[in-house]
Length: 463
Image (spheres, rainbow, N blue to C red):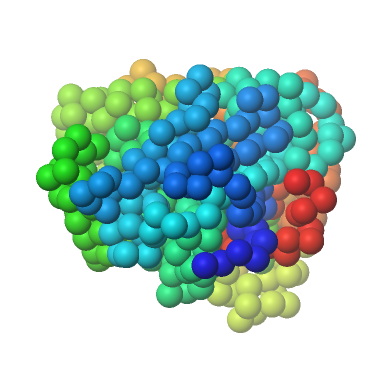
C-alpha cells in the first residue's frame, strides 16, 4: 500500500483539428496538451467507522468543494458500492472515477475491505476558468461553487477524472500510473469513468490527451464501453458487472495514439471569450445534419476530413525539418514574425523552398478547415464558428506572426486558438484595437506531456 504523499497531474487540451469528425474512428484528430493542469494529492485519513473506509475529495478553490463517500463491499460478491456523505453536493466525475477504479481493483483482488480511508485534494490551474481580473494568485479561490464558475473550454472534466484515477491507482492499487506500462490501464479506466459521468460514450480525445499528451488520435469503438452492464441491483448483476468491467478495462481497445507536437518556435495562443456553449447539444444537431443532408453534407464531411489530415501531415513534416534544417527553419521563423498570413502564403509561392512551402500550407489548410466548418455552421444551424468569432479570427490573421486560428473543438463561443510565431506573442497579447477588447489571452503554452507526477514540495504550500 502506497502511503507516501505524492501528487499527480493531468493537462488540459486544445483541439486543433478533427472536431465532430473524431466521432468516426477512421478520422484523425490533432489534440495538443497545454500547460494548464489539474493536480490530485492523495493522503491517508481516518474514517468515523473503521469497517467502512471513506474517500473524500476536496477542491478548496470553490465553495462547497467537498465530496465524501463511504465504501461498502457486497456481502456475497466483490462489488463495492458508494454511499454519499454529502447528499446535497454531487459531482458525477468524482463519483464515477471512484466507482470505476475501486471496482476494477476489487475485481483483480487488489482492493480489500481492510484498507485505509483516503482524502484527495484537487487543485486546478487558473486557465481552466474565467478569472475576475488579472494578477490573481496561483490556484485562485473563487467565491462560487465549481459549477457556477465559467469555464474556458480546456477539458477540465477529463483532466480531473484522469488525475483522480491516477491518485486512486497509486494509493489503493500500488500502481505507478505514470509509468509507460501503466498508461493503457490509466487510459481505459479514465475513459470508462468519464463516459459514465457524462451519461454517454464520447469520442475520448480529451481523456487520451490528458493521459498521453499532444497526440494524433483515432478513437476506440463506442461498443467497447457501451457493452458494460448498467449499475447492478442484485448479487447476480454485481458479479456480471465486476467481470465485465475487468474484461473491458483489460481489452485491446485499438485506439490510435501517435505523439505529435507543434513545430519548434511556434506557439499556441488561447483567447478566452467568456461565452459558453453546450457541446452535447451541438454534436447532436451536427450529426442530424450529416444524416439528413445527403450528398452535400457528406461531401463537406469528407472534404473536412482530408483537410484535417493535410494539416496534421504538414505539421509533422514541418516539425521534422525544424530539427533537420535548423538554420533555414529559424531564419524563416524570424521573417514570419513580421508578416501576416497573406505574406506567409506569398513567400511560400515565391521562394520555392520546402520550409517556406510548408508554412504556406499550414496557413492555407487552416483557411480550408475554417471554410468547411463555416459550411457546417450554415448547413446545420449550429454555431460552430459564429459570426463574432469569424470577425475576431479575421482580425487576428491580419496581425504579424499569426499563421491562422480556429474556434477549437466543437466550436462556439468559448475561446479561440491561434498558431503564431514565438516572437510575435507579446505584440499580439498587447494589441488594443476594439476587436480584441473582449478577449482575455490565457497564460498557456503547449506542454506535450500527459499525466505525470509532480514534486510534492512545489504543491504542498497550496494545500
